[in-house]
Length: 478
Image (tube, rainbow, N blue to C red; front, side, top):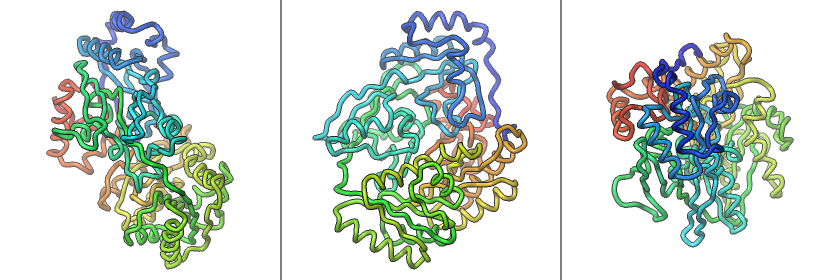
């Protein structure tokens, strides 16, 4: 419920020193790299979660790793909290600041520093958008695999913080599977280089620790990412079913047969209609559930895979099958899916959950999600990454009705608890942030949470990096 998501008490000693802190920041940053006026700071008060807003103390816009280093050292000396920020597309409140914190936004660090096609990597600054990487290497026949729906806006640094995924990550993996190295600034202002262009780095896997750490261990300023050769061909196919049960059982059977398509996306009837009204992608409107399954390879490989998938779909009572016949048609099909969140926002306010379940439990998870939302008197549209069981139920409500907002958050919490009960987890790619913070005790024991906090304390002993996120407030270590 909304009333359960609280923020810790502000450090009034910091607020009392605001003028001197701003003077100190102005001494180490150019004027165009510091925002101190209220209207400018208000642009950074929230992220895509949007239900909660806090205007930060100041916003730093560094242009280099060295400027990040100077700001971090200054904030350490002044004992000021720091909130790293990419594009603010976080759906879990991961980038929401507080009034006693300085936001370090990576907006100005948006250069592609190196492209090496021979060794298949690119080195980029953290503020480069996800899609910009693929756009830069696409003409040469390469791409960067993780593709969140927000890839036009979201940044590589933010993707690393949340270990973001996307529709095509079923085959190619999420951010951690495509990340080779980072340049990283600690809370003390030390610059670390972890990993690199090689396939594996010596020593402990600190890179794996940083990816998904939600900005609580340091600030990534540069990343080295893996590039993949574009396939010979790719083809999405729409499969329509008369029931959610048939569609979800089909997903489980495809994965169970050892078939790994490039992507396998699920939409139920409400989501199909919402997306079709927006994108006009030719989605079937007379079915209860739809799968978008994409295969790739040579023409012979694609046809062989589609024949196997088609036979499985037929065994699960598929009603309609529509194969894309052109690159334009494929783009339109994916436009509908990738526009799902924005298209839903035209119809109603919503919160988007991010739990995962084993694919074999998808039929039960979908049924129970509908029952949970109905028990709160709310509607739900389901659109998600079916191949890896990463559910994204969009719980619809009226943001102008505080009671409905509380009901929506309570329903979302119940859905996430159900995911954990079925053997899944609280988040597949959106992160914990503040949204799932108080639910961490549903997944982890006291010993497990304390161990995670000890790891964080090695990097940030005073908890000044992205504070009040991830861990339940009542359980924070002294």
